Image (cartoon, rainbow, N blue to C red):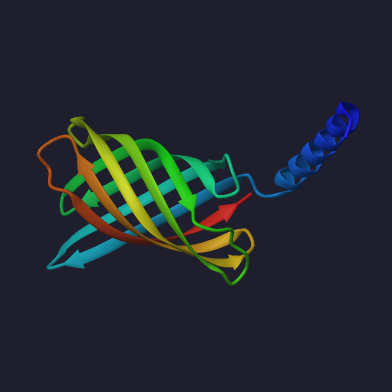
Length: 158
C-alpha cells in the first residue's frame, strides 16, 4: 500500500470516527441527594454536577453540593471524574465509579478539603436519561470522621 492510499484511509477513518463521536451526547447534567429524618432532626444532601465526556465512558465533572446534617451546614464546590463501565442504552443497568476533590465551607466560613469516592448504578430510562443510585464516601482534611451517604437522582445527557 502506498503512502498516499494509507493517508487517504487514515483521513476517511478519522472523519468517520469524529462524526460518530460528535453525534453522541457529550455532556451530562446530574442531580442527586438524600433526606433523613430521625427524632425531630434532619439531614440532607443535594448535589448538582455537570460533566464533559472526554471518551464515551469517561467524564470530567464539576459539582456543587449542599449538605445539612443535624444542624451542621456546608457547601462544597469540587471537580473530579466519573467512569461508566460500559455504554448504556434504554433499559440498561450500567455501573459507574467516581471520585472528586473539593473545597468545603461551613456556615462559619471554616474551610476544609473534601475527598469524594463514589460508585453506583445508572438505569437508562431513555438513551440519554438515567435514574442513578449512588454510595458516597466523604472524607475531610480536618478531624471529621469519614461519612458514608446513599443518594438517588437523575442524569440527563445532552
